[in-house]
Length: 193
Image 1 (cartoon, one colour):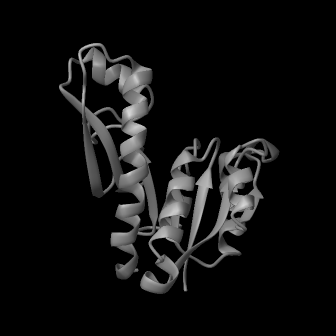
Image 2 (cartoon, helix red, strand yellow):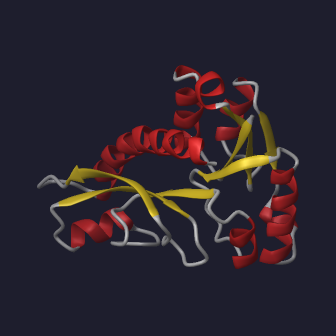
């Protein structure tokens, strides 16, 4: 069985979309895969409630409890390893990971970013897309590398910018596409793991 461990920091809407897709599309039977655990760096992350309601292991590794980024990443990796992951999925996980952590899961560590990478890595992507006068925005699923919001692109979804868009209205439309794109990209990758 290919275990998927999902990392979150907050609401976990992409995590929930992945869990629902795995259930709806029969990943266990068709892909020999399952979401095994959800881990958050924040105890108050609302996504943990959903994970527990789905019967998933839901754990917390507080980044504030560790003296350095390296110490946190070591504790996080230890929690992940307990679930023997085939794939580690960042779903709104708002921590920059150390190069050692990234290399440990090379080729098996995914992220979704709310822009059409390589455009607008980092934060405030929707405001930056609107400010640049873009005609389209979107989301990108990519393999994580040591360079922030870079790495091989696995899938993208395009969303048109509308004349009266605000960062919030654009974010809502992009998020809708993320919830479709991320599970599909994971399902396509799983047979190759």
